[in-house]
Figure 1 (tube, rainbow, N blue to C red):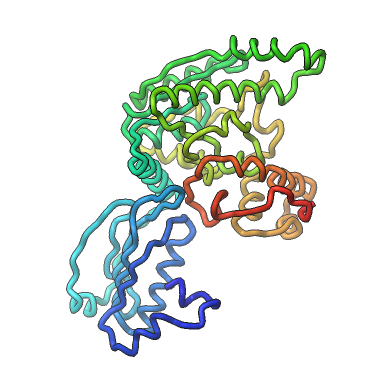
Figure 2 (figure 1 turned 90 degrees about the vertical axis):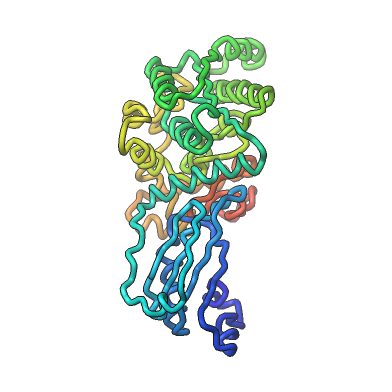
Length: 394
């Protein structure tokens, strides 16, 4: 179906097959999931059923292959393009149909009413599960900070792999708040996941002491912040290496986009679970997970996001509010709008240009991210290839 809707193709394969007077159209597909495309896909299938006046069976692959997640959701349509039946999403399903019954069916079956957030949730769970199964791994390790990104990653991993197979490590520094440690412990206990606490204070002071003769009297800055993240990365990778865990990266798409992360620190990992999920969607996913009972502690969701790498730090010290940031990023990345178009939408020019500059100058970091599970129409990685040296964008 995607071939005949592409103007680059001069041959319409479905049209060519009509000379054989078929009884039905069977579309065997491997269409990867993104939360924008379900309605578009259904509309294209509907047009084909109506155009050729034939019942249509859309059979879609289900499962994950590295970054790509195939959602299933196979469809059966009558000649009018009405949906006769819809199969399950994100799990294998099997049904048998009588062609005559499909042809006679008039009423369109109601499509399963699935929100974008519920679909993203199920996609990420399937993506994690299949990634581990196909690589032959059973256990994950996560650096649990008490923040919402690591909390959400842990909750998704526990659902995908089983709570006993997700090992959480709390790695507090002198800048970590007591409530963050408490929140992380509460989450691990809510999900009945194993966890340990390893303070990085001693290691941090040791590294600072070794560098003091060279840093001399230079003030504390992002360098010392990054040292903390890199110490955590070293410890998590050592545990991963020693015990055969896959380290799950917890960075969200907003952070990955603007480079709000540390190379060889919190960018470590064998799989990026949230790298295609904006921060605003992270909050929505946390609420979705808590829809029946509190799994992710409420304080994790409501407290101001912070990397806790210096005293009283908040994300908004260096970034705009996430609802503003994410809308600018969405227009630039998914919709491929330029700065002039985004500014015309009502955003402050200085802010837009600063954010887009951060995106463009952070490309070198994204070249070194783990594989990112894809849930949008434009994920970082294989789906968005940009040069690191981007003078033309300045």
